[in-house]
Amino acid sequence: MNSRSLAASGCLVAALAFGVAACGGDDDGDSSGGGGGGAANSVTVYSSLPLQGASRPQTTALVKGIQLALEQTGGKAGDITVNYKSLDDSTAQAGSWTPEAVSANARKAAQDDSTAVYIGEFNSGGSAVSIPILNEAGVPQISPANTAVGLTTDEPGAEPGEPDKYYPSGERTYARIVPKDTIQGAALATLMKEDGCTKVQVLNDKEVYGAGLSRNIENSAKEQGLTVTSNEAIDKNAANYRSLASKAKGAGADCMVYSGITANNAVQIYKDFAAALPDAKLYGPDGVAESGFSDPKEGGIPADVASRVKVTVATLSPDEYPPEGQQFFSDFSKKYGEKNPDPYAIYGYEAMRLSLDAIERSKTGKKEDVLKAIFDTKDRSSVLGTYSIDENGDTSLTDYGVYSIKGGELTFDKTIKAAAN
Image (cartoon, rainbow, N blue to C red):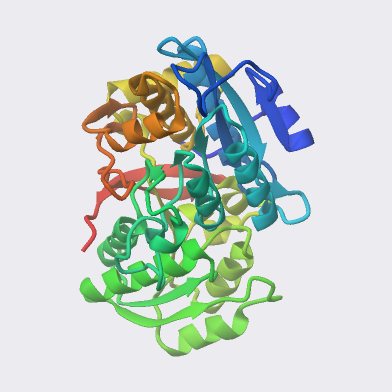
């Protein structure tokens, strides 16, 4: 399964052009999801994703997956009509999500009485901004991609005050369908150990996601018997990272793992470390699992560097999924004419399917009932496999995929199972 550029559908084109796309409804629709007596006639599901910059191919795929899920149910959750609105949490200037855009999106959903579910954010740092806003309004939130530990627990990798500071109401309103970074950190450490690493240089981009994951990698690497030369927080605006790479070389590092997102100068980091450590193996997390990192035609790393890189993502090869997942890839390919759908497409699809299921199980479409239904999710048979949502909002899924890079595309190598310690 390859990561590739995806052409936007008509609705997404509008999203990219105007920042907001109304798909299946508008703010003036007849909906009553937020209050009143009986069940709502119609409700709204929002998504908030970075539709510009390095993550665009992945988020385009997510939106398409969301749209396919809604189309397959005829735009309904039981007897309730579901309208979908795609919001952009990025700006062209930043090339990634911004706190201002995230805040605006969260407030828009929070102020809409018809809101039933908010799908987002793509970046954990973005959710650190949107969760408190949505939490105060009691809006259920489902992330298709966040992995930062501190969003849901105070396990290793979390910052002081996490996760409670995100939930001013005292009630949990956020859930995710990808495994948290205690598991990704263990997966990366397991992979490096299997590949023969002995001394590992860890780098992080200082964001909620990157800083937290780097601690998980460091802890797991030490438990695997690996030596961590250091865990360095990088300056994303630096012209180069030659001094850090030279320092890592002096410490005898034979492997480097970057914990962060592509937009925070990841390409320059890998080029500089590849040059300074010509024999070292290079690793990255799902934060760089995108064509903006892997494809030199889109500003990604050169082919000679890419040949030394492995990336972990909570997505698998189509044939590694249950029959429902394999059917999804077949349906997606037929719908959009894409032979190799981006790995993230299936997470957009499942985020919407879980939303629709929760809305239907709620009987009313009211956000408080939908929220209860999300957290009551147990042994759900889905395209991702069978999973439950625990009291913290975390999924019971644990598998991670290992990807190499060939011809500028992420190519599935194997599944790695690494339980959090």
